[in-house]
Image (cartoon, rainbow, N blue to C red; front, side, top):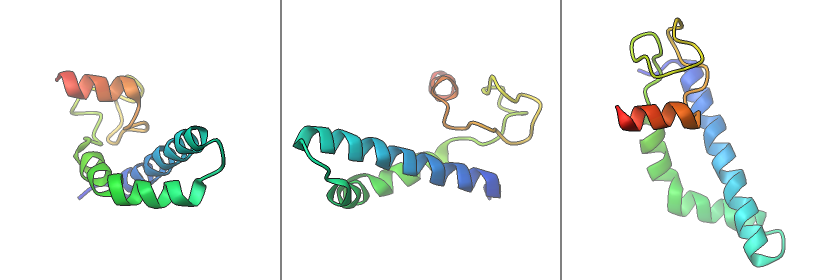
Length: 90
């Protein structure tokens, strides 16, 4: 079971990804398409995002992948690009 903080971090990362998608789609359309973009993100990406996010390890002390909090039990930035790159290359 993932710690509560990890669930919060997953939710924050999901919101960030939705905001990025809204911005890209609004730029592409030349107008604000927030509501449509949110629905589209949920339909196209929500399931795969959740599966991916749940697969990201939240432990730091044991994995040695986090440059920020190696001595903590739980990562404070589990979705940091550098950390994700280290996980992928592990």
